Length: 270
Image (cartoon, rainbow, N blue to C red):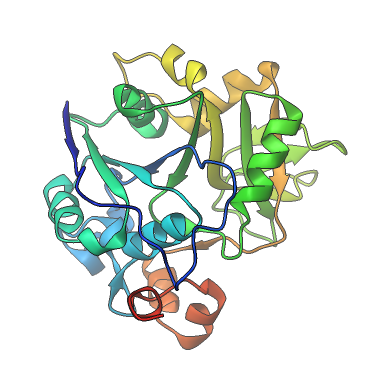
């Protein structure tokens, strides 16, 4: 396991304002280790999180959003293309966050990657998300407040399904408690899909096996249902670059407006 920390990068003030969240944001883990096989004909050996969106790596746009929301410490879980992500991180000092690299020696799965980074994760709660998707306009403040109010070990962001059948369907009761997961399977009673954004109790992560690959979607989440998982129901749209068609759409003016993420110029020149 290889970890790299950049301790010399201070949390900056963005757009002339201090970060937006009054309470500390937990450590943020971004999953960046996927093989990205569907995008390989388009990107070659470039890892999916570094796919350019209007000339800027998607991962950079995502990290800037997290820094703007008040996250000073980010762990990137890498695998395929780890060297390229490391070079990007080392050359992006102006982003304003302490960036750590947790590199897998071999694929460990979406939950196993979190377990692999356990030694780097501080605090009782971890914010985890995918490195190829986001929900524009998502309020981390509200998500964290609901998570604290429910007092449950796991919360996740869900968005309206809108006929989407390539994301995990989530069945939620009237109180927001998750009743069932159906990964990439349409269900008539599933009005929501997972956005791949989680608040997780660190103790749960510590209990994951570290000797074999573990999937968040197929292994961890279903096993945590009995402990209580609550959904934060966002009315936003899941924006992702996981297929050639979606990556191409991400370059359009319509998509960039929907994405609404800050460009480097928005941050560097208030």
